Structure formats: C-alpha cells, structure tokens
Length: 106
Figure 1 (cartoon, rainbow, N blue to C red):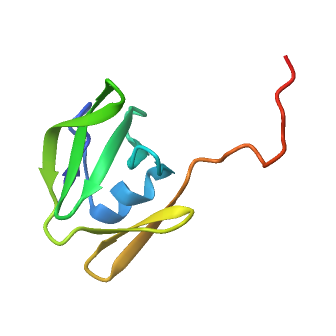
Figure 2: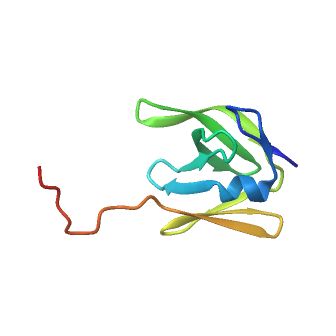
C-alpha cells in the first residue's frame, strides 16, 4: 500500500509516510506531516482505517479528503499519539510547550 502526498502526488510506504509525522496537537487532534519529497506540510487527522485532510475554520477542523488505510489504528497518550498499522507503531510527540512558569517579556 502506498500513501500519497496530496500536494505533489508522490507516494510513500506507510513506514516512510508515518516517520514524516512530527507534531501532534492534542487540543485539535491534528498531526503535522511534512512531505519528504516536496516539503509541503499538511495537518491531518488519523482516523480508524483512514487519514483525514482538510482545513481549520470556525474553531474546528473540517475533513474534506480521506485516504483509506485499511487496518490503521490510533491511540492517544498523555504526550503523544500512537499510530499503528499491522505490527508497526509510530509515536508522534505533542507540540512542544513553554515550560510551566516561563513568561514572555515584551
């Protein structure tokens, strides 16, 4: 199975695709992915058996395109999202946050 980049139409094996996932935003339940071929960055939602692509608007993420990935599963952890397919698991860490007590000085 090959998973496409929606920007350049390059296709990737699941291991290469999910290794390019680099940030999980728990509040919006979105994963940031950067295409290894063209450098395009997409936000996506990992759903059971598919990936959902879309746009953030009006405070929520609307899925407009879906790519089926049979057997795809997800599990939210405290500081990451675990994506699994067959026996393989990819861990996507949450976006880094400012340490507690840190302040901005403007």
